Length: 441
Image 1 (cartoon, rainbow, N blue to C red):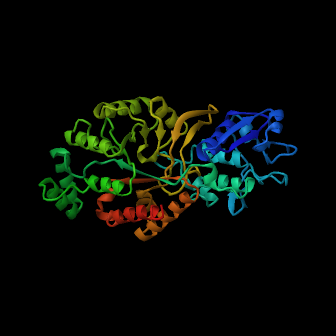
Image 2 (cartoon, one colour; image 1 turned 60 degrees about the vertical axis):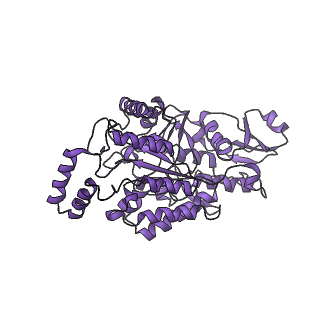
Image 3 (cartoon, one colour; image 1 turned 120 degrees about the vertical axis):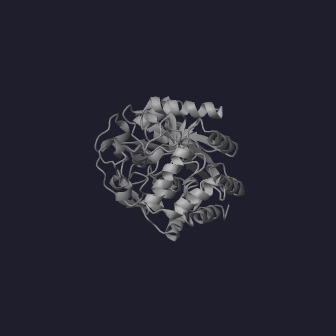
């Protein structure tokens, strides 16, 4: 098994964090960091130095000051191209193995450093807007740039070595579903449906009125009750799905799922548990509120009689670092929110899970972030792409993740898979892109 030694004169929490991700998490290679020049010189295996000045007789990478700092401040970002990939934190020192500090740049992107610098750049829901991100400005949002840098670096440093020779990592597809509204009409009670009928008639939604009546009279299946289709797909492609359940304590404008006291909802939750992993979908109202997140988590755990480990924020609403701190403190272990609602791609420029680094405390945590690649509504509601255009975009994203043996996380809602209204025909897109992902595997 390959073992790597890296010399750096000063070891900081930031350096330890980013090297752990690159070599231990992503590449899955045994490696060590040392501050001892003598140990480094005596080592006869694969090695390189990471420092501000060149090291005699060894491969060397120039070091930007970012990873030596312990605060958050404005950084001078100048984008340029290296091996057809965008890069920044560059150097003119020709002795550096690569002309930029890949480690500092990766840290900047993965920790969402820029989001700490501009907390006011949010939409009406309080979400950081993609259009302000370096990835959008630099036109690399749809590329897992950090993983691409790592692969290019390994090929440059150790030419001729096959990725599989030093890593067991392979492409993985992780299907996830947000259950914001378990049923369209059924199990919601007389008052809710009566009010719905009146609104349908007043607003001229006669097709919806007809569907509501037909569903309530059991003349047709509830459109959102398509869980059999979801289970079938995941069995067909041998996938392990994650279901994120919205269970707000109080019904509100953005939190409209059934109560956990609803017997039909409880039966559905056990069915989902039997067919995958159930996680928490903290309500819009919970935001970064530890007490609300904890209460919702405990309520769902009592119903399922199991401990919850995974979560995804409703509306993909993250406040950094408060949301991750609250989720961690509530006892959750991994969050699947890291993506933009308005754009598809790689918000943290990475396509495998990584640990949350709290920039304000300057420390790595054991709370993990599983980055999202795309959400169904992003194509249809935000980008307003056609079905054909959306399918082509998903295929491009799959190819990007496959190229770096990453983890492809999709987000669909049971409501969009109903195929009703402006979601007509989208079920086929999901099936087609799943089929494409596993065509050559």
